[in-house]
Image (cartoon, rainbow over the protein chains, first blue to last red):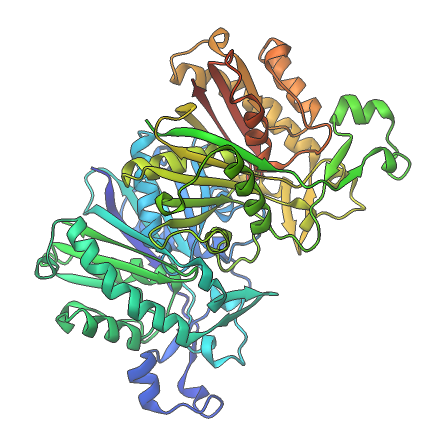
Length: 305
Length: 305
């Protein structure tokens, strides 16, 4: 059974503090701690590119588990901030990590739903192509496209990367998925002329409406009920959206972590970074993961021990 | 069995003639007809974006086959020239075509190997997620990033798009695949600061070396011999590369089409555009498809009737 054998991540040490921006953006402490729930956002160095963040995540993976590179048969990167548009960043990561020639590489262009989609893509691809070991990276450094004068985006998004080692005898098996797209609303989160723009209210309303409908469908698809789930990892967009989904689904708050106070919303890396911190918790047998955002797009799945 | 039910494409009518550039680039007729084999390249209108080319391809698909949009469960776009980097172009196409909300969408970032990879991605994804109907688009309008003063690129690449309707009871079933990446050589075909640059000799040498080794491996993986194959569709990079691979593999030239004289190398669309013209040929029972380029990357498969 193909699943997640291990996860590692990389969050740049440099932080921009939101409390320094209180006057500039007319925010009070309550807004920072209770509404967005993000005290500071992580920022990569200017000389680090997306592929470098992936390499750092891989170095951290190697500290946890021995990787025989010659056995890595596929390597995918989920990103919408590639090093270049041509070629794909996965090829650059492949080169930097000295991966073997018979390794399949491509990038998956998705935002905050990208890790969950990516799990389905890599699992499917590996099963159908009879592959045994693969790597799924996420790295979407929004600092490359954020206008620091834009409150909507500059106080929320942090840089980060993750890598999931996928193969047999996993720590987490992967269940059935749900997927969704509302392409007509794509303009609500868009990067034009290298500057990100977000209609925060529209994105919030989308997630607050769609995800509470999606989770019951996901559970049904996996023959599970809400009470069977030990942990719900929602995309860490903001404290307010996670709290709102929790309320609308009437979930036990202790089962719904929000843990990005110190580094912010890392887009497709938000779920795997949180998952990494829980993967060895023996009490957690069934974990829901649910990503939503750019596209507009969403995807959810259940991970099993 | 999931396979290719139908293919349609769109090639913009506007052409730039290479014979007009003979003096500028110091080319003779023989170079144009025998070496590159491309007399003119197709160019999209400035007001057409990548998603628009996909929509045109879909309109042409609808002329061939009735599509019930409510039954389309996934829609992927292979591109490295998206409308925007954020969001994915597949979401924009989803919106423009008014596709249903439960449709999974993402872009696959790959160049000339992208259609073959894309076939594996969509087939795998659909089987594993028990989907019945999906759409695989290719659209990579290099006119967005070509420097008209650069002979290496401006005489080769044309704009185009394709859509493959994927599902059960297909016209072409999809066999086993080979995949490869040489990430260390990624700089040989790269887009920096929105300008494409290609080391033509390096790309040629890569393809001329790797593909003649890859095809025997592909045939073995599919339990076939060279003589079992009725048609070899290689990525239409240039006449010279297709001729060279044909010679090195000692293939019957009549089995190896090169048909892009009038519109050029359309990157990930080159294989599906050619495949469209042969899909209803009753004499062709087994077709090899092989894409190679950006990454550097390659992938091959066998399609069966």
